[in-house]
Amino acid sequence: MSLLPSPILSSRRRSFRRDTPNPSLLNADFLFGRARITNLGVIILSALASLSFLYNLAFIFSPTPTIPNPYRTHDSLAGYEAQQSILSTINRTEEAEQLSHLIIVPGHAIWTGVWAEQTLDEDYWVLEDYQRGHSAARLSAFVSHITRGAELALGDQRSLLVFSGGQTRIGSTTTEAESYMRLALTTNVFLSASSTPSTRDEIPFSRATTENYALDSFENLLFSIARFHEYTGRYPKQITVVGYEMKRRRFTELHRAAIRWSEARFGYVGIDPVGEGGAKALEGEFQNGYMPYTVDTYGCHDYLLQKRRLRNVFARFHSYFSSSPELGGLLSWCPGGVGESMTKIYEGPLPWDILGEYIV
Image 1: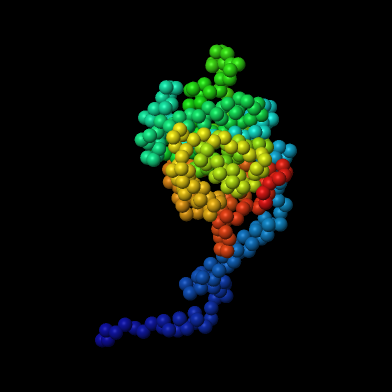
Image 2: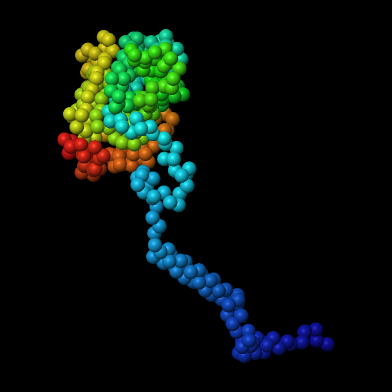
């Protein structure tokens, strides 16, 4: 007896299936067959791509809705709720909208005291190392800058006093500008000769504010103009800076020209520390301040840029691109690209061009 299995006609069955397919199963085999599974994927992807293409065509050629500009008061704010706009939180007084004279007091350190008798005490100031030691004269100069700025503001009813300076010290919890304002209020520098004791209980002086982002003298000037616009809704017609006498040329010759501001509408009040306005101080200002700006007008390269980085220890960002969009080009201007000088003056439009007599 043979132990071999009986032959199975499997070859005939395979041959029959291959040669005579069932027409009713042809489409299913084509789509779902193991060797043809990619065909279904191609069809699905093609359909999705077609739908996406048609959707994008409809989006591109559909009418673009008009979005009102929140910085132009005559534009309609339809479609926007007022509370969603930053401008809805601004309530400028009629007095503020009439101001035209910007008085700037740049900051040089941060006062941490709370009493008037602490204004000349080094222990209540956050200072750089080079400012310590014989600091009494420097601190006295800082206080004199604040006092003189207040006097100028009291003498001009159309002026706004701006204390300018950022949070530039790692050991500080406030900005240079805010500490100057606090010192001014603590020492009652805004009380004029005609003030009565009752005024001490009234609100702080309304024509003084702070600019909390500047990291150097150029930013003291430009950012204070932007802050003036935030506070008043307009740009100034006259600028007066109160600072070190040794820095006069830096402001009047370099910074003023960099923003194309008229020399006739720019003033400077210089007050140096007693005993520190000599040849050595002038030489230090010339080498470390004036000269670097003669080769890097906007302070955005190398040495001057590094100084800004070291002072921006808390990574602060200013708001002026939003609140003063007319200054956007100047705020971001940094010449010195390929074939371009680092002293090239910004030539774009500026809000004060209409006043005339500006450097081009």
